[in-house]
Image (tube, rainbow, N blue to C red; front, side, top):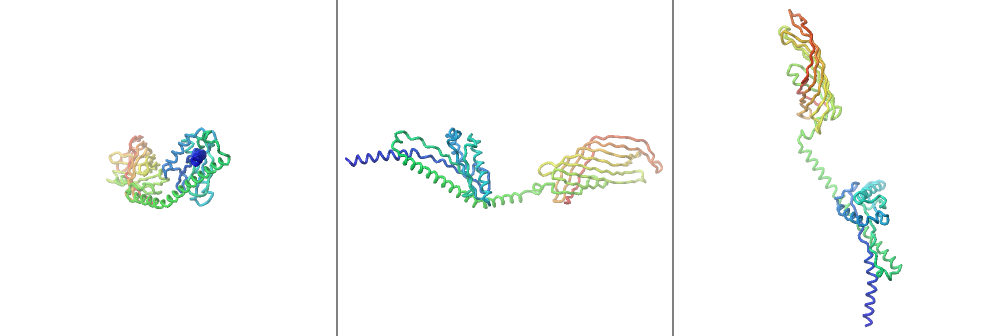
Length: 371
């Protein structure tokens, strides 16, 4: 009988001591967010960061009043050891801590004052957030009989448990960072091979812009087809802007000077190249020159001046050659004299002035990209 009484007394004592211990244990409130070595961006879906963030936000939501009231701070520890110097590692750790805090401020509705931040140039590439959530208060009956020394012992045990949990999380984060670092050369090699494959399979017209040159001689083949030699030069100021100038000259007579075709023109132009490949363009051109036409009984001789809006497209033929298709629409003003030829002598027959609205220039121009 005395043994039963002793066993029952011991059972009650254990109940009074152990039950409060379990009642006062804290929940796991340590959260680890991993970062890519030498990078400061907070990739939420990477390495289970999304799960950790969701759990942390739920914990913040449950304890938001205490957090905003200042009685429940969030301890943020940033770690970095993948850079060359301690100063760089501390700076990177601070940036990473701020990235995580920004997520909590925006998505959790808390403030900067709610955090206690420390940064470390050691251990790995991660950020640890620790929230010391108080355990539910034991009832008055459960707390009776606990001495001050016993309470201090329990508090020390809880602190030790938290320390071990933090170290365990840090160790897991360090192993994950080491694995990511070991896998990085393989991933980088795969990315380089993908880029090389993309460059190889790209067609020449797709892979090369029409604007890698600075100076390019030009020849308008339409002018040459009408026995009017035409040469020019384009200066590509930048991939998007160019200045071109073309000049034409010809002088022909036949039927004992009864027929005449003579002309000289200079046409400068400013161009704005469009799109990613910089092949199409818009621009403005100016034209000035003199002419002498006598294709019938009456000839015309005088000056011309005008300009207009240009548009065109360069078709790449090879690395050095392109065809430039262009047309200009605008106005030409001409002052000229009419004349007849009598006995080999030109006789003036009148003077006229005319304005022409419409196409003022056209070309199929061979472009040689010199350099």
